Image (cartoon, rainbow, N blue to C red; front, side, top):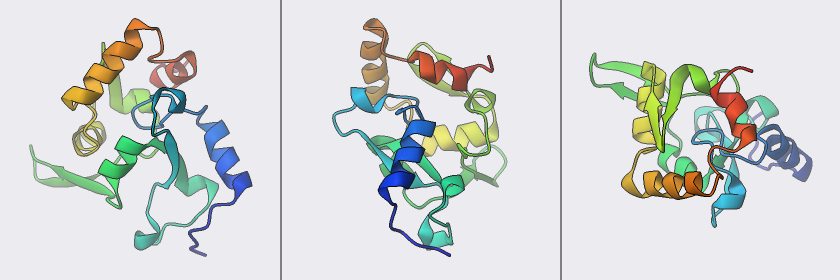
Length: 148
């Protein structure tokens, strides 16, 4: 059943599961004045359910860039490629950190990084500043980067 209301208990589960960091760019909600939001991975518009398996925690920037999109075109080969799915994909298999830059490793990483605009100048600057004060990536985010 598709529904859009997200109960307090379900929100809490999503936030705790994400360790209060954006599951796309790995920034902490505490380090973002606009915070993070509970988001449908597959939007209700596309038939996505409001269930734990279809919800993630996303910062405002990632969420706004993603919108209701499911994927994008890989311009190297013209193929339609789905976005990174925090419920079924491991972040470190699709992306790697190079200082404040989020580099894609796979086609899924490439379309996700491009559409979510991970390496926009302002977002890179924000991560550089957070790195200087030892706030990026947080230890809870590092387990998403490397399997420990």
